[in-house]
Image (cartoon, protein in one colour):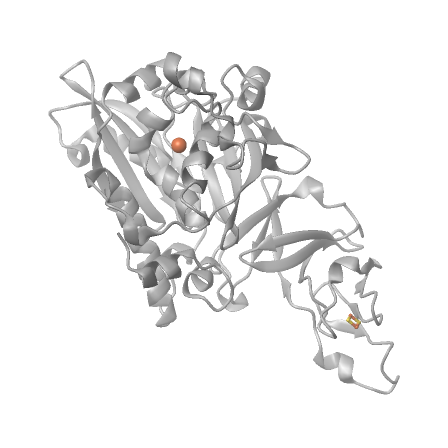
Length: 425
Ligand code: FES
Ligand SMILES: [Fe+2]
């Protein structure tokens, strides 16, 4: 349970809010690079952290991001003409170069130097892993891009899909931190899913109330869930990673061949951009695996509409829940698609979950720890302390994994754990 005040702090992402300031210390992914025309193309509208923005490439192919707001009278710069060396606002012809500086002000007298004092608000943009990332924080402390594992593999080794979710980003993120829901909400979908093997699925369902080792780290949090197995000598361990503020890494299969993760990026207080990434650290994904993500017999994302970037299963149609499947198969949710299942439960909480009414149990310790970290860092930043996780992109190079470990050895003392952790770091 949270106080109303903390719940509000947690949810607000806009400028001059506590969490909004914290989020602006990190690079923010926002669109596939392929969606922005290569040279001197048309601006694309984007909303990120509650700010209305545009992105385009200038005549030299450099990415430019402006606030969608002309500093003259506030007309959307989206309508502007890309002249290669600058973007011209259609209202009174003011023109801004790629840094945002006003280069022409044809509506003012020729002798005026007013233009030297005006610039459009702009943010740096970088391309990485086929995705554009923006940095919306103070320029003097801009960190390097985050070195997440799937960024470093070839495009053939990963599959990335993006869609929007109609709720606050923290409750969307909480779904990945809360591994105890997997054996319930996703029952009946798991072993058919692109990122999990039959063996892992059976192990997950064998013990539905895992014990937790939760460790806060420089980059965020390591979550280890321990499950008993039918073999009393071995426990099944699943290691999740949370890379602040919105990146999650879900455990691989036991053979460490397939990994899976998300980025839960705030569009505004009540909408979230979901990036769903499946990758292999060791080999190329097969075409069949890629196809299965959206079109398999039990797809990971069943109803994505490529034109709108939204799911066709929505709150309004109860996520196409099928009561027949719920009653007559092992699909507890009756909802097809792992992402649809997650979306149904978190969107159903409301646009911004009311955490003053929750009753959290021991299985919620990871969520409690994650919220505390976000709130602690946001409040510390308000007091002038910069977040450690944002200090460098280097420490995000960790991995998630799963393993069968001897049950008589404590987790931290098991040499296999140090081996796996070291190999992943
Ligand atoms: S509003 Fe853009 S030039 Fe006047
Ligand atoms: Fe889930």
